[in-house]
Amino acid sequence: MSDASSSSKIWTRFESKKPDGSIIKLKIENRPVEPENDVFEFLMEHFVTEEAVHKASGVSKNADAVKEYRELMTLVFTAVPIHATACCIDDDSDTRGKILGLSVVQLMRNTDKFEDLIKDMVFKTEEMQRLLYAAKVLDGYTEDKSEYDIFYYGRGVIVHPDYRRLGIAVELVRVRELICKDTVISMTCAWMSARGSQKAAEINSWRTMSEVPREELEEKTGFTFDKNLPSFKFMFKDVLI
Image 1 (spheres, helix red, strand yellow):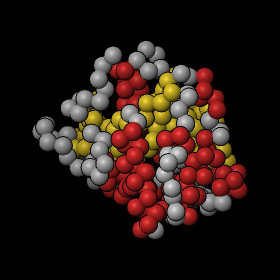
Image 2: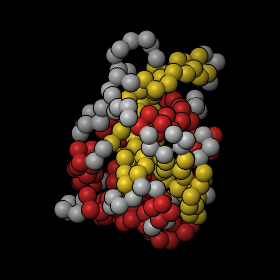
Image 3: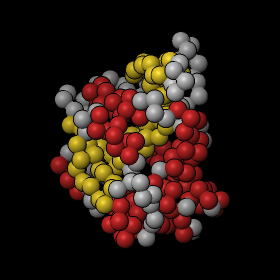
């Protein structure tokens, strides 16, 4: 089995045309996942503020909730196998550049329970309590994944607002399959909670395991979501090893 977490590994190189017609060279590479490093801060700045469930929870608007979320991420990043791949400009240097897009996956077994990981944590803010309740509601729609013994579970794919519509999300999702092949894991899956990530998965031939209408999830969680997103999709890809 290869070491997919090797910090120097570059998974793909590709080019994309910017709105002004110029060509930008990009690459997807591994990034170390550590508390409060660039991966951590990119997730805090973009994923927590823009991903549908996180945004609806209001966590990013409450300083105390942000502090609790940082504590949660620190625990998760240090307690379970987390793997991050980042998109950055390909300038032929060995220096890690600015993160333009990020994909985070967690190696899980079907017996793993997120609530077991955080059972000793106490969250006092209403925003964090609501976020974790919503996560529990979503988990109830994913029982079908139990037929797989081990898989890569997506913990987020996000692209910097200034670099969207360049095919970065499509490439980040494609690399998840490459990671599976490299580590001999036959399935990867994730909740796709944005049209961009759903389209990226569809382009990469992911299938939908569960689909929840926006209105149904609003009723069960008490959240209000962007009406431009008709449904949340739990999507997966069987990978030929």
